[in-house]
Amino acid sequence: MTKNPTACLLIIGNEVLSGRTRDANLQFLATRLGEMGIPLREVRVIPDVEATIVGTVNEVRAKFDHVFTTGGIGPTHDDITSECIAKAFGVPWEPQPVAWERLAGHYARQTPPGDFNAARQRMATMPRGCVLIDNGISIAPGFSMENVHVMAGVPRIMQAMFEILAPTLKGGVPVKSRTVWAAGLQEGAIAAGLEAIQQRFPQLDIGSYPFYRSTGNGVALVAKGTEEAEVVAAGEAITAFIAGMGHTPIQGEPD
Amino acid sequence: MTKNPTACLLIIGNEVLSGRTRDANLQFLATRLGEMGIPLREVRVIPDVEATIVGTVNEVRAKFDHVFTTGGIGPTHDDITSECIAKAFGVPWEPQPVAWERLAGHYARQTPPGDFNAARQRMATMPRGCVLIDNGISIAPGFSMENVHVMAGVPRIMQAMFEILAPTLKGGVPVKSRTVWAAGLQEGAIAAGLEAIQQRFPQLDIGSYPFYRSTGNGVALVAKGTEEAEVVAAGEAITAFIAGMGHTPIQGEPD
Image 1 (cartoon, one colour):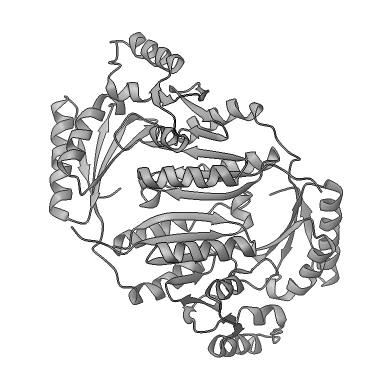
Image 2 (cartoon, rainbow over the protein chains, first blue to last red):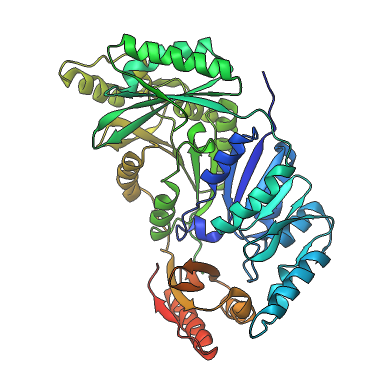
């Protein structure tokens, strides 16, 4: 049985907690991290409040192998993630020379030249000792501070940053899965049989997810784990079990 | 200044952490709770792991006025939320007579009669002392245990449960908001002026959210708070500030 590194995601921003903005980063990171064998074990959505950010970062960076943050690294007064990370690590928050040069150059090249003002300079101010995460889209970099990876909140910028960061992370064994769809079946009718299969494959996570579609209801049964042979065997066991109940199972790749 | 009750949401389920399922409950609850003056202050997504659920529930129920959970109350082996709530409160997990009767009757009325088997009986097994939350859609009730409100994960069932529960919750002063859209403006150009407005209205949350659309980029500036007159005044101050920069602001209701 393989022990994979673990990940936690902090989504930082009042706008997600107020319902104004629908988060679009959780599912992307959950999927990509699973593929890399760094399964996401917890997500927290927290407000733009210094004590909360500092306290939460310190709690989860001790508990998980990797912490990813999204949001709060722009130029406005409510963007306080970067200075909170410095406080969490007890290091100065100071101009980062490479980020400073990139941003100063970016605004100088605008027509007419943009003002590299105090607000924009905040995007080049970072915890001492951090490592930049390049931003090919909107210039202002993210950064890693030890095992805490600080990224933008805007999904396409976050995704670009993550793809720069990903090759530098030591992954584990990718999580494999098999899904069996059982149309017309109710969870309550298959629970005991499914639990018996879970007991045969204790290293796997076997989950049951009802679906409701205009073409009919049913249940999706998912086996997940790092040992492919076991995942395949569990998928076959589930298929045989559903067929034994007189239903036609459909087995497939991860859906 | 009004002190509103606070809320925390626990989204319980491996399927959200693996990326298989995209959560659709956060935004609904964030919006509805804001309208009721019970602002959502934190969200956690946690796996179907007993120690994690029990520990998290006990942590957050002490910290927030209300805790809402979604997911993990179905009949299958991975649905362990209900028994974990009983463990968190240190009470027996036992048949709940009203839920039991409803579910037994429901399966008896099916054609052909459904089996009210051990798996389905689990959905009528609850922490001693809980108060049911009716489920008009799929029968199996949720429940409240003191300030912890346990709901289904399927969005339309969760929403129906919430609307049954909502009138029983003592709300606070609803959060009001004004949004000013400033097309063609960059956050870095307005950050200092916006911060000055935030300082004039310290009781409000003033946020800046860039948008990227095919018709052009810009920034949405949002003032939120419980004092309507202040929210209106802040919206006007933001509008005047943007107009003063030579741009045409559009002010509106919450977007």
